[in-house]
Length: 305
Image 1 (cartoon, rainbow, N blue to C red):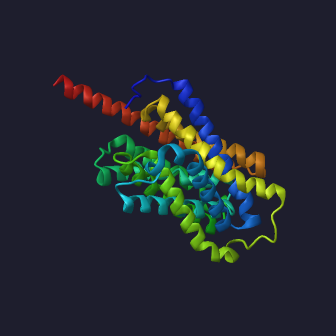
Image 2: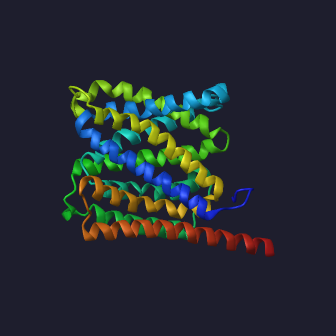
Image 3: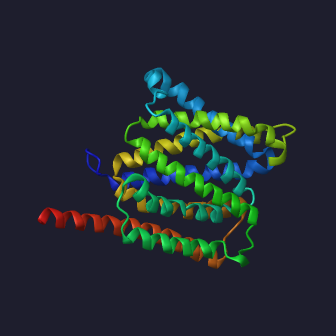
């Protein structure tokens, strides 16, 4: 569906790029802090900062609308999937290069495309099946036996994929009836609760920091802000362009993750891993573009009849 005020593709691309850069910076910060501070504490600060900023800036104008929901159980499940995503992905980033972890995680959109049929009633045509098959082959290039990726890290990023799929499907379901800001805020509250619940496991997840220096404190504080800003940029991208324009471009995040991995951690994928990432991105973009064309063609034929 196109925006009622007309599409502005270049403006949407600018907002989408800003959102993806913020997401990548959030991941890079979490990866950096995970080994120094411990993942449960990083996750707690990330969600708490997100919730606090939304409450301070939005509660005065929205009031109870910020947390009012008609579907609390579904909101809880979405929050749990987001909390699991954060914990598992930060753990994976502590063991894997950022580009590889991001590329494997981008198998999730293919799974969502396939499950959207039986679970959400969406039509699943041949472009989605072909894209999913190619995306899976691309993932095999990234996680091939001679890639020397930490197997525990791979397990955690696959758990991240499961959480990501649940998160996206639940988000689609909630988008029909729920206020998007309330959904984001409630998920952050669930993330705070889950992170606090696993905080006693901090010792086995990296250990408690003896103290926090100014750099670590600043990086921790940036997590919540980066999360909120990235969500705002993401929403603005969809304001200026429809989902059919945005969806194929989400795979550009693999490029930004590769750039961040090299810039911050001096980690570059091998040639075969690069090829696998390219296959994943190209397959996803092509599947979505072809699916849009098939839908448009089918609609045109139906109207002609």
